[in-house]
Image (cartoon, rainbow, N blue to C red; front, side):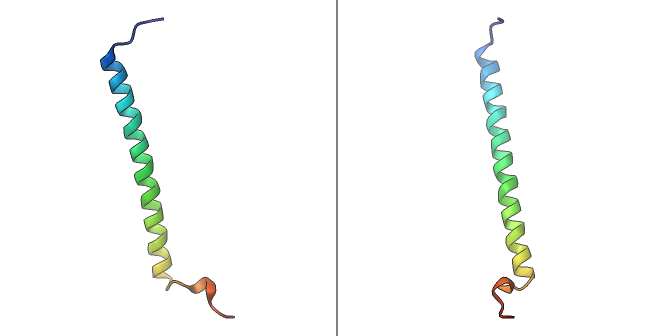
Length: 50
């Protein structure tokens, strides 16, 4: 097994954390877009009496 330098480990960890942050930002954007859609539709349409 090859030795891995501490700098390589740090870089790999930094890349993994950046990927996780990117995922969280994408999820937040999706939720924001969903709220904007509900607002554009007038909100509350699913509770409207028939």
